[in-house]
Image (cartoon, rainbow, N blue to C red; front, side, top):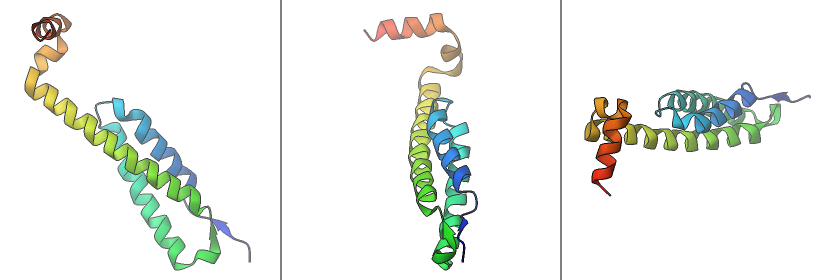
Length: 108
Protein backbone atom coordinates (compact mmCIF):
# COMPACT_ATOMS: atom_id res chain seq x y z
CA UNK A 1 0.00 0.00 0.00
CA UNK A 2 1.37 3.38 -1.02
CA UNK A 3 1.53 6.05 1.63
CA UNK A 4 -0.03 9.43 1.00
CA UNK A 5 1.34 12.72 2.18
CA UNK A 6 -0.39 14.24 5.18
CA UNK A 7 -2.78 16.98 4.07
CA UNK A 8 -1.42 20.52 4.30
CA UNK A 9 2.02 19.40 5.54
CA UNK A 10 3.89 21.91 3.39
CA UNK A 11 1.34 24.64 4.07
CA UNK A 12 1.75 24.11 7.82
CA UNK A 13 5.52 24.51 7.47
CA UNK A 14 5.16 27.65 5.33
CA UNK A 15 2.62 29.24 7.70
CA UNK A 16 4.87 28.42 10.68
CA UNK A 17 7.78 30.18 8.98
CA UNK A 18 5.60 33.15 8.00
CA UNK A 19 4.39 33.49 11.59
CA UNK A 20 8.00 33.86 12.77
CA UNK A 21 9.09 36.20 9.98
CA UNK A 22 6.11 38.53 10.40
CA UNK A 23 6.40 38.91 14.18
CA UNK A 24 7.74 42.43 13.54
CA UNK A 25 4.43 43.47 11.96
CA UNK A 26 2.87 44.57 15.26
CA UNK A 27 2.24 40.93 16.21
CA UNK A 28 -1.07 40.68 14.37
CA UNK A 29 -0.27 39.15 10.98
CA UNK A 30 2.03 36.49 12.39
CA UNK A 31 -0.50 35.66 15.08
CA UNK A 32 -3.08 34.84 12.42
CA UNK A 33 -0.67 32.63 10.45
CA UNK A 34 0.52 30.92 13.63
CA UNK A 35 -2.98 30.07 14.79
CA UNK A 36 -3.96 28.71 11.37
CA UNK A 37 -0.77 26.61 11.20
CA UNK A 38 -1.34 25.24 14.69
CA UNK A 39 -4.95 24.27 13.94
CA UNK A 40 -3.97 22.59 10.67
CA UNK A 41 -1.07 20.79 12.35
CA UNK A 42 -3.25 19.45 15.14
CA UNK A 43 -5.78 18.15 12.60
CA UNK A 44 -3.02 16.50 10.55
CA UNK A 45 -1.42 14.90 13.63
CA UNK A 46 -4.81 13.59 14.73
CA UNK A 47 -5.32 12.10 11.28
CA UNK A 48 -1.85 10.53 11.43
CA UNK A 49 -2.49 9.10 14.90
CA UNK A 50 -5.62 7.34 13.66
CA UNK A 51 -3.81 5.59 10.79
CA UNK A 52 0.00 6.07 10.91
CA UNK A 53 0.87 3.47 8.25
CA UNK A 54 -1.25 5.30 5.69
CA UNK A 55 0.52 8.68 5.82
CA UNK A 56 4.01 10.12 5.42
CA UNK A 57 5.37 13.58 6.14
CA UNK A 58 4.62 13.63 9.84
CA UNK A 59 8.04 15.19 10.54
CA UNK A 60 7.18 18.15 8.31
CA UNK A 61 3.93 18.66 10.22
CA UNK A 62 5.70 18.42 13.59
CA UNK A 63 8.35 20.91 12.50
CA UNK A 64 5.69 23.28 11.18
CA UNK A 65 3.81 22.96 14.46
CA UNK A 66 6.93 23.85 16.46
CA UNK A 67 7.57 26.83 14.19
CA UNK A 68 3.95 27.93 14.65
CA UNK A 69 4.28 27.75 18.44
CA UNK A 70 7.51 29.78 18.33
CA UNK A 71 5.81 32.26 16.01
CA UNK A 72 2.82 32.55 18.33
CA UNK A 73 5.04 33.28 21.32
CA UNK A 74 7.05 35.90 19.41
CA UNK A 75 3.89 37.53 18.07
CA UNK A 76 2.23 37.62 21.47
CA UNK A 77 5.35 39.29 22.87
CA UNK A 78 5.41 41.80 19.98
CA UNK A 79 1.71 42.54 20.42
CA UNK A 80 2.14 42.99 24.17
CA UNK A 81 5.07 45.36 23.55
CA UNK A 82 3.01 47.43 21.10
CA UNK A 83 0.11 47.65 23.56
CA UNK A 84 2.54 48.72 26.29
CA UNK A 85 4.20 51.33 24.03
CA UNK A 86 0.85 52.79 22.98
CA UNK A 87 -0.43 52.93 26.56
CA UNK A 88 2.86 54.36 27.92
CA UNK A 89 3.81 56.87 25.21
CA UNK A 90 0.46 57.39 23.50
CA UNK A 91 -0.41 56.87 19.85
CA UNK A 92 0.31 60.49 18.89
CA UNK A 93 3.82 60.33 20.32
CA UNK A 94 4.61 57.11 18.48
CA UNK A 95 3.46 58.72 15.22
CA UNK A 96 5.63 61.84 15.68
CA UNK A 97 9.39 61.12 15.47
CA UNK A 98 10.24 64.55 16.96
CA UNK A 99 8.14 63.95 20.10
CA UNK A 100 9.57 60.45 20.42
CA UNK A 101 13.12 61.81 20.19
CA UNK A 102 12.37 64.35 22.94
CA UNK A 103 10.99 61.66 25.24
CA UNK A 104 13.95 59.36 24.64
CA UNK A 105 16.39 62.23 25.38
CA UNK A 106 14.68 62.75 28.75
CA UNK A 107 15.60 59.18 29.75
CA UNK A 108 19.30 59.52 28.91
